[in-house]
Length: 121
Image 1 (cartoon, rainbow, N blue to C red):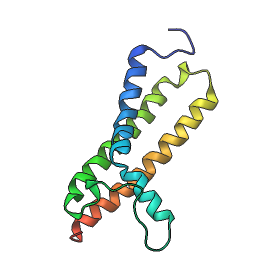
Image 2: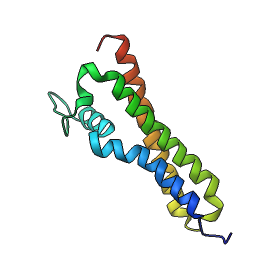
Image 3: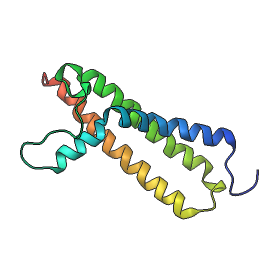
């Protein structure tokens, strides 16, 4: 394989893993809503209402957040595996940073959603 190129299979898997985060985020914005509300002060409303914000759906929210977190971690690992084939190191390090921070934020929100189940939220 030539240096600087990912195989078609590697590209497909990278997009599948990124899709595991992007698709739920576009449909329901669980991470976006939480970060937006956290950054605001006072009485806030979410960016967009969705069924995941209903207190009866905390288990579904936790599942969606877990899938998003798994997708980000798998995409990070995928980039680690193919790093020697990517010539643009700036793109690579920006990708590492964004995936790591996204996974960290999603992990934090996932932990909050799991702990809320025990409080009867």
